[in-house]
Length: 426
Ligand code: HGY
Ligand code: MN
Ligand code: MN
Image (tube, rainbow, N blue to C red):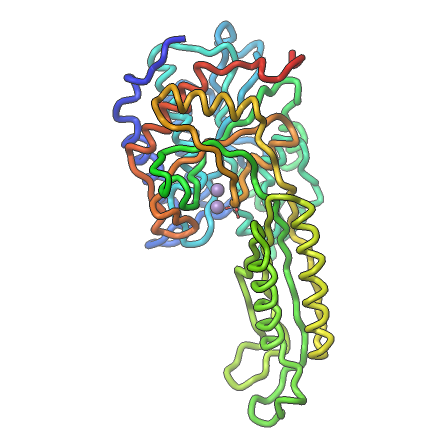
């Protein structure tokens, strides 16, 4: 296969401009917030669908709101018969006040690569699907990865009845988006049809920048457990209740959060975050009677994460008991650590080296749609350097040069892809 390295000239700026354009689809004027099944998600999905079609792919929005672009294999151009498929893509939903490149780069970059193949009239011996997943961040509903879990066939349809902060059910939001929730099961891919899932994503950390590298190959993705924690005490008059007679839910939660931080900081690789907290009734002169906060706990090994969850629960129960508080922990989401396939890691490294770049392997502390796809097929990820390792922050940034380099590596990977990394896979 001839390489197309020279034909990607200027692609970095094109990719960046596409992602920067999608960043205008936001619920807020001066910041980027695009949650699952929102009007701005719909507008962005339509723009992604158009970009996929312009790149020579067929494109549609599936039953769970994913945008699915497909570039047929050599000899299967009419789409009547389908060859085995390599899936790529990432998510287009964002956190609140987000950076533009988390997820979105992993949709725009493969689109640019397919556009290059299409411009050269080139087809590969396998089909390529680029999927823009709609629910990786899990910001709107108390669940996440519903898009990628649908493709993997692992989605629990009970999740369709969860509600967002306004009480809107997930299935009603899907119908409003123009989807048919009853068709979700039919979107699952068959394992025998899928060669691999390979995701391109910003690193969201400082390693590549510290190594002076534009790209890196991911070895594994940390597992994560997310909880909604409720602490209940007794609301009271801030002026009349002596300290030793209080059941202050917010002071209790504060001690709990400090204990969580201390537990995570004591162990290599373990990270824990209380990302959101709300205290009721929320008046300056009332002792808080009820607090809810979130916990996101991650580790490279599932055993380590499960042990940490157990010890955190013990610590919180001890604090609640001493302070005469009620404690409830609701598990919102749990996804095990996902290892990338060695055969894919080798092929990403080889593509990186063919492009004249030192191949570096690194783990992912962030979660990704690839975790869900690991239930369907072998996975791999190509990380792209981001400025200062900053992410989940409007300061998140990439350079056009790095986007172009990553596109060259990814296209090189596609054009050299050897499906035989999976022995006996036919
Ligand atoms: O939380 C994560 O790791 C991802 O950004 N959803
Ligand atoms: Mn993210
Ligand atoms: Mn992401």
